[in-house]
Amino acid sequence: MNAKDILIKAVQCDKDGRILEAQDLYQDGIQILMEVVGDERDSNKKKVYLERIKEYIDRAEQIKLRVQRHMESGEIVANIPIDENSTGHSYKSLFGKYMNADVKEILIDEPYIAERYQFQNFVVLLELAAKQCKNLKYVRLVTKPDPKNTAEQNSILNLIKTDLQGRNITLSIKYETTLHDRKIILSNGYIIKIGRGLHFFKATNPRYSLGLCDYDFRNCLQTDVDICRTKTFS
Amino acid sequence: MNAKDILIKAVQCDKDGRILEAQDLYQDGIQILMEVVGDERDSNKKKVYLERIKEYIDRAEQIKLRVQRHMESGEIVANIPIDENSTGHSYKSLFGKYMNADVKEILIDEPYIAERYQFQNFVVLLELAAKQCKNLKYVRLVTKPDPKNTAEQNSILNLIKTDLQGRNITLSIKYETTLHDRKIILSNGYIIKIGRGLHFFKATNPRYSLGLCDYDFRNCLQTDVDICRTKTFS
Image (cartoon, rainbow over the protein chains, first blue to last red):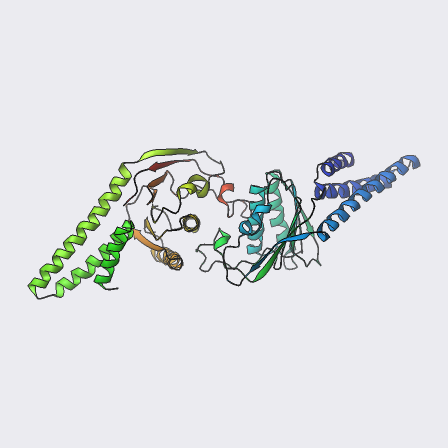
């Protein structure tokens, strides 16, 4: 897509309440416009481009602030302590009821998506989201790059992205080396904070035991889950 | 347990409608009594033992006939054709509604439980059964011995048996070299027949895609599912 198409789509997403996707598109559009403006010699046209760029930077910045405010203004609706070795705490059991047709976008901050079991946990979360959030269009994963094997991590995440694309869900993958906090933000106004992030399940041992696929049977590590409600993004 | 305790438990199970478990217990009890009678020199006592043995053999035989009749007298309540590469056909979606608190026993005839994905499918079925059949006490798996690696097959199945034992469900494993037909019989009167048995799901490809744990996202192989209803076992 060229800058124009990208920015038209950005404005559409923005109006449609899909602000995370709009934010990405504004940023992509701005980057292309910046290149165009660099090559432009006509000073009047240059001025128009620069005004546009400023306008889109402002919009992207507004979204950033809106998401930040969104996270600060929540009230806690549930606090679920998970005891060591307790069971019955699949993602679905914990917060499945908040994942509904009102969710168009999901933001997942999870520092560790690099090991096999971590990819599996991420996919299990996506299965839940894709099944229950009938209008889900966009998921942004923010994670740490794996210092041991960045290429493999990126390759597996891109395969997951392709799989979701086939289901009309855009997965945007952002790497942040300093990420620490874990949270899942649903665009319907719910925020899920788990002390350990996605990875609070013990492996089945032996492998072929109940819990292999249904995480309600998995023994858990001790952690706490807070669920907050704020206004919706848009 | 000695023969007396085994046979007391057999009679209790029989009365309680847990006839598959009773059948196993009768057979175990009979075998121990046979050994006892061989060592017994008092001809009167020997006679009493033999009468008992005959009585228990008759009861075990009655159960066998009851289960056979059970399978012959059904009416089809659902026929579900599964198209090649279609999705939405997890065990839960197909027949989860029949797996309820009325199910005390399940008989699974599935010739192939020997490969990794086959063990996984079996565990996924057991997860569904353990979650939804709140009064499940007994599962009998009838399968073919794996000619390539009988020891490993038996070892993995026994680990699953131990896992279920910890959840108060007895898993009985029977090997039959000539087994062909596939079916799942629930003691509440429902019989599920799937042309391909448990293994009609394609693997996720790439591995980390939706469908890894939630089989509703898996592409299927073409097969047919018939669900019949008969009277309950007992």
